[in-house]
Image (cartoon, rainbow, N blue to C red):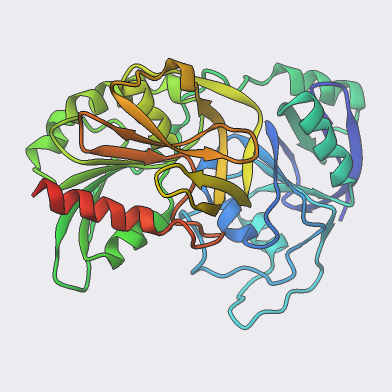
Length: 362
């Protein structure tokens, strides 16, 4: 390990030790409060363009494997931890986190006070930052942090979407044919649909609505993904054309895009929701579910037309919109991750509800 530094745009600079690759990396600095699941987290495409702080103090202790990835590669721009484990122990592990980062050229910094950094973000909001092992000049690093683009207005889905459409068939008798718009889809969303006897076609983010409708799917899923939803004008345009013609399920970014398609607005949150223990109240059933979340933007509830949409879920932490149901179209969405991975399984019913929607549409 060699020296490394993390600088935030507000002028805060911390020194630690590097792990993973050496070099320099930039991004919006955010934090995740999950206690486990670091491999699923760092391979989630929704983290594209972000440097991630883990609040759990020890990371890497159970290694990594090739079964728990949520995409084909690590998606975070960099990783910040209190302590990186020098040893890993798990019967499923095939590599260390340190080496996994190194072979994918991802820079990490350890031996820093992550509690202090998280307090900075909670008080001042998510900030641009830089991790470097090659430039240790505090002033230079702060200038670099302030020079990178803000997450607001960034269209990142095109950087993580599939380049070619691909199909996944269920081993069971096929019930429904689903098209998944890949704005940065997590593998487990597709797995959950497959488990429910669906045949799935995953298509690039910019696939036209006409192409989707010509394939005559039973339903359409709008996936999670990174960046500012308001920058995906092409996606909003396509969703408008599909609304009312095919049942739709939106997840995370897909939830925000569905709201934009019916005239709603989104806004950037102060520091977002990222973790696996966020309480959400289902306003339809009155039940509370513990959810897995990863988002930095949210829907403005005052922008929604009550004749078009009903808010079905809210966050019990801050009251933000966590679910929608459209009144004039067979479509609904959730802000959180019902597929979890990592996280609790309280919300798996969302996929079953989508299947019910498809059955009713038939």
